[in-house]
Length: 270
Ligand SMILES: Nc1ncnc2c1ncn2[C@@H]1O[C@H](COP(=O)(O)OP(=O)(O)OP(=O)(O)O)[C@@H](O)[C@H]1O
Image (cartoon, rainbow, N blue to C red):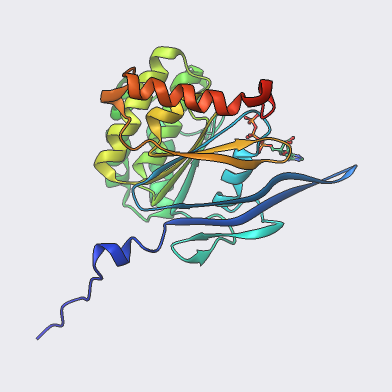
């Protein structure tokens, strides 16, 4: 008789966070010596959670994301994924950046999305292209499947980069102001698409933004940071504030509370 797999109860499974930062401290080496970008930041991200890192320019949001991606080694403290120390990049963590030049210029949009599936996930060509097409349709690029990146607008390139990440169905999606350079309408649509996909695919997300309304909408939890060096000033639970609540009094109240904290003491934190 085949032994049944032992599946721990949900409360035990969820006890190990997908991501865990403890006392995370990040430095850059410069001509004038060491520059401390982030100091003593700690957080957990459970499966399916969407943690937003929010704060003014220079508070270390991107640096924290780089540490989670495995591009930047902590000067002190630790970062773990599912209990394992992060020592470098891995295919289970995919980063979407703000910049529009994330695509390979010699590949079609479809093959840009299919390529990492084939290489990192060993998905057969036909299936990879099918998954690429489905992801591209979801971000509104159904008519650009065969186009090459240089023929796309900046917004379309960004949609393709997002489709590429989503198609790979990562365990953790890391997004660094992915919508910041998009026009307002596209930005709104992609916010909605991202939330729907998060619901469907259940991925865990760490999302960087300096837009408070976007943070409240996208996040299930907000981690507020102040600058010089980047450090935690507050956290907010925002799981109940999604698309249906946008613009509602509770939603707007959290936006105001976050704004007041970030601009406390006449902009002391900014
Ligand atoms: N490659 C680097 N070399 C030296 N210093 C850096 C480097 N990257 C970032 N920094 C510094 O580290 C600090 C945090 O920068 P980071 O880009 O993480 O902040 P941020 O919150 O993402 O800012 P923004 O919202 O403007 O993108 C800043 O003081 C910045 O000047």
